[in-house]
Image 1 (cartoon, each protein chain N blue to C red):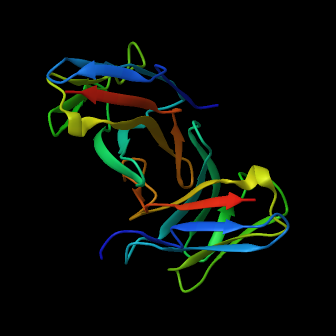
Image 2: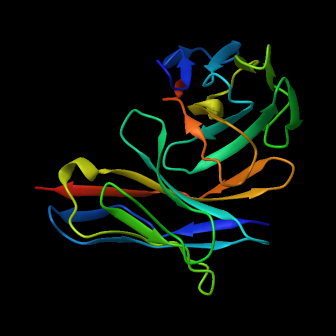
Length: 115
Length: 113
């Protein structure tokens, strides 16, 4: 489809395991964002990519979290040694540019559950 | 820093009732303002936006007016439907090297027949 695609849609894993979450943005969108949405909470900004570089990683909650983007397209968010508090929905968004009037287009998210 | 404050939910309305969801913001400069909607199990979708003072965004019967004097962007709809049941997020966006978006905590709307 033409929208932002995230995979997997659901992930259940044991505490201490590593997980990788994937985001495929809309073709041609140079900006890519990762957010975390915990139950009953708003969106927590994690990281922003412009092309393959990440000018703002300020939202990553700990050094267990990392992300990369290759070819100016697909991005992977990796969580190492998962903890129960990492359980949340991880949303990816992309936008055509960085002007403030450009809306972000969201994927359906990955629901991560840590047992 | 920037912030967005929304009325707390959940909001429960009967079908065809009038909807208002309040949103106020704090930001420097001249941000763009958005309403996003999230249906169960899905990501956020842009509902409407306004990019300067006194602009009115509208879509699917929803409206919101950018009020700089009251720093508000309240969402309204004259007659809600069951299919409008969702979580609504108010957001502001500023350009500061990149598009920095601040979201409110969301307001859950439930419309009952």
